[in-house]
Length: 113
Image 1: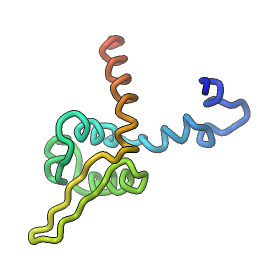
Image 2: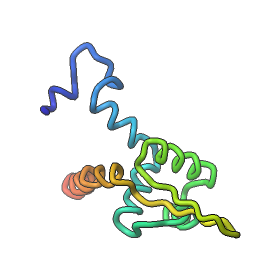
Image 3: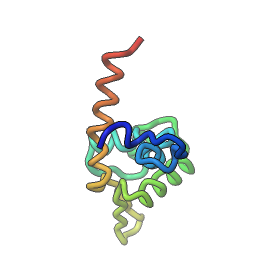
């Protein structure tokens, strides 16, 4: 596949492969959550993620995790115990995006102004 395949003339960007990829990782916190799960811990609980990110509300984190679960980027594992225990990890699909995040990180390091 070439870059030309992603940018088709006369086609709305949301209908392209590039647009689809953007729709999956779009959002202020999705890539940050993926980065934490990939680089620091393979499994994290809700409160761990919230503390790690620092600037995210409970409502926003909950909504973002639900979107990521619906997109099959993360796996939500709920344990039937009291108090409730829920853990999040990257799915294989989510892990497949990590090389893209690594490239973005490298680009930022090389091109920071």
